[in-house]
Image 1 (tube, rainbow, N blue to C red):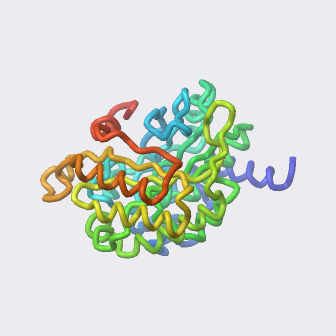
Image 2: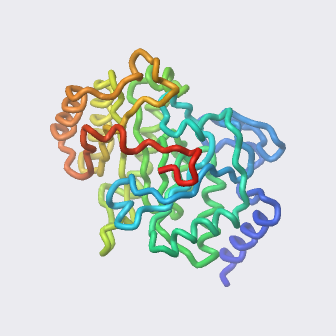
Length: 322
């Protein structure tokens, strides 16, 4: 066994014995753009109200991702609790609110659950909203490797990530699946609790693009093995923000990037009475953004059907949320 493999094995054993990821988490937490610099080992909490433990709300089969990720079998998605963004319209609000309880499990339990899906033929493992749990995500990836498993690892992130953190993930993450939410700083502040989302997200996206470029590497089964897919969710009442996001991708990266344009917005209970977000998209809003998508030259990716708003709502009170 190589020295690097021995070190990885030691990390995993230590985690399984203590329920912690001490080999990864530094003295203070500065992995995300919040840079709270709190000592999560000592029980202090930063913005995300997360400990140094592994806290997972659900490990489940999901068929609602892009076709090159779901394939015929679906993918195994790992949903972390809490988030470093607090989007008021989040469809995963049951688990993403930072005032909800953590659901702590041992790494061994998580690995057993993931392997159960891999044994059925699933080839992709997705990490959903891991920006505040980068050390824990790496622990899972290393743990699977120690067990001889090397699925396609997908990082499904809000893109509110430090460029330096994305740099540290080169070699860990096979497919980046960021959601580029805003070019309007006011919307980022009002809807997600951050002022600097556009600049931070663009730096992270540029780094993902540096690592992966515009091409997706697809295997014989039609499943992506490496690459970058940028998602954008169209919000009701904010067509200009969507257009500005698409323009930024085309100008800052390339119109050859794979983009997943999403129309699935549906008001969850947290925004039912919101004056703007309390409704679905209109056909006019949808058509306007889709027209700009093609006008900008995007030709690789996916555009959700207009009627998609009721098809992707999870319920994390159930054993199988989707």
